[in-house]
Length: 426
Image 1 (cartoon, rainbow, N blue to C red):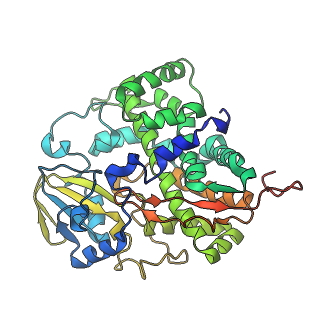
Image 2: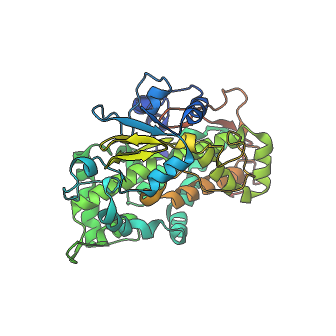
Image 3: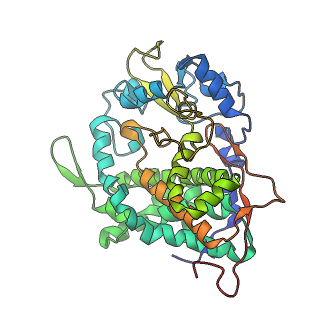
C-alpha cells in the first residue's frame, strides 16, 4: 500500500460529504426532525399507502432503493413487527421487481446478488460468505483495517485538529475494501467515483483478474477468482470475468458506501456526550454497545424496499401484487413496542437485535466487517488522540439526510504528540 498522502482530501469530501451533490438525489441535505415524523407516522398506523417522503411532506429529491417506480402502488411500514414479517418472507416480499414482472426469467450472471432470491441468491452469497464470518475478521484486521486506521491518524496527528468524517471515517472502509481487491491507495477514489460506470470498471478490473488467475494472492479478489459455483444441473464452474465483475462492484459499493456514515454517527454521538466519552475512554468494552445503539438509534440507511409477488395483507392493510413495500427501518428501530424510551441514546439498555443491518436472507453480508472497522477506528482515535474533543470554534455535528443519514461533519481538536511520546501508538 502506498503512502496515505496519495489520498486527495478535497476529493474525499466531494465523494463522502452527505451535503455534497453526490447525495442530493437521496435527500442528503434534509435537515428536518426526521424521527419526529417517523414517530407520528408509526403512531398513525403500522402500514400506510404512500412513500415515506410523501408521507412526511418532503417534496425534494428522494430516490433510493425501490424508488421512484412511478407506475406501481407504494406502501410503507413503520413498526418493528411488520418490517420483521417482511424480512422473514422473501417469497412474497422479493428483493427485485423481476420476481413480479418476470418470475420465470433466468437470473444471469449480470444480475447483482442483491437482486437475486431463493436458491440462486444462496449459491452466490455462499461463495463470499466465508470471507465475512466472525472467524475471518482477524484476516481483515491484520491485512487492511488496522493499518488503514493508523495511517489516517498519522496523516493529521501533528495538526492537533481534524474533520473526522473526511479525514477518517470515510477513508477507512474505502481503503479496506479496495485494498482487499489489490487496488492501490492512489486509485481507490477513482474506483469509488466510477462504480456505476460498467465499461470503466470492466476495463479497470480486467488486468487485476488476469493477474489473479495467473497467480492468486491472499486477498478477496483471489477468493472470487478461485470460487466454484454449482449449477442447477449439478455442474460446477469457476466464475467468469462478468460474474466476478458483478460481485466486485457490489462489494466495492457496499464496502465503501455505508460503514463510514455509521461510524461517523457513532463518533459524533459519542463526542457530543462528554460523560459518555469519558466512560467509553475508560472502559473500551463499552464500544460494542455504543456501536449497536447507534445502529438502532440512527441507522445510516433508514429505508429499504421489497416488491410484492402476490396479493397479501400486512398490518391489517391489503397489499396488491406488484406493489413496492418500503420498510422504514428508522421508525421500526425506535418502536416503543420493542424498546423502552426508544428516542433516548442509551448504551446500557438491554441489547436486542435491531434492523440496522437489515434482516432475513439479505441481511448485510459485511456486518461483521463493518463492526470491526468501527471498533478499530474508535479505539485508534481514543488511543492516539489524547484530549480528543469537539472543536469549540466550529459548528457541532448534526445528523442529517433523508434516505441516507450521516453526520454533517465532525470537527475535533486534540492534544498533539509530545517529544516524550504523547502518541500511544509510538
